[in-house]
Image 1: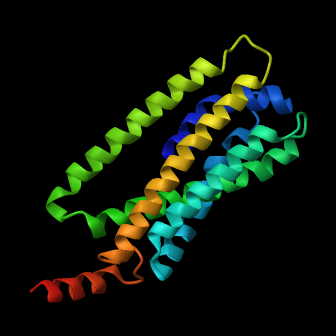
Image 2: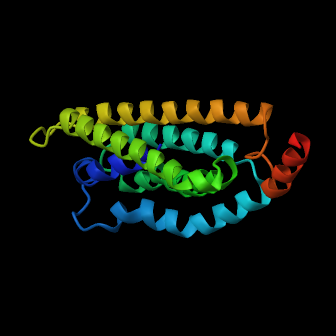
Length: 198
């Protein structure tokens, strides 16, 4: 799901300059990272209190879908409307970071943590590469039409749906096996599971 953010950020500057007539140095372009940076600590505190990390990942996918759909259908020359489209993207980004990386410690053995991060980053880098290549293919620079950007939004919605489906599979797997990622206190839940195994 990271590709829904990072690939979009590669092309969003040109898109919003054309669609909303924004200046090249406009602060609008940094709203995703600014809002995400402010919300991430609060998202982390919330997930530590309620658990439900897989539900946060599913919700993130839903927020990304909403954001990219709105970005695709927004009328031209209305830069204020951009804020409402970008807000779900920024909120989803904050929860994605917190839910994804806080899950590692509960599902991956400590001695395999480096391998898990390496594999995760490999898939992230590959999806970003493919997303950027697809974006470069469907968004021709010389074309004044916004059709290519709309096609790219559809691609990013596809990425988001794929990430949401993966999160749903993870949710049901966790719900029927360890319930670690749903737990408010995963360490306590892990001790209970260890006692059952012994």
